Picture 1 (cartoon, rainbow, N blue to C red):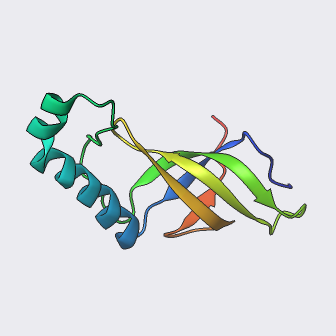
Picture 2: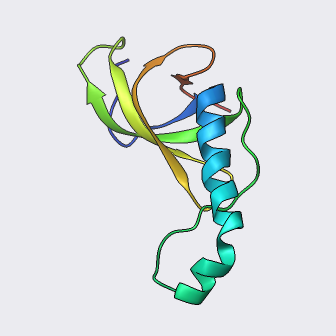
Length: 104
């Protein structure tokens, strides 16, 4: 099956993904009072801790080719108010891969 923009798949986080997500969220907590006082509209990143191997829904935003082996870009919807943009991700098992959800 060729991949398509707008499809929702499941993305598996890497250790680097989890570290970046958790750092953004920790930085937010460290400066939360400043954000509240300034009220500039900047997005603050809050949510539950992320770990390597966690699986989250990803919306495919770009497809690099027209075969089932093509890589995709997407927005990963995290367990919080933020998302993670990933690029050139291939379908498969394991970290930094995506899979189509099973039909139930």
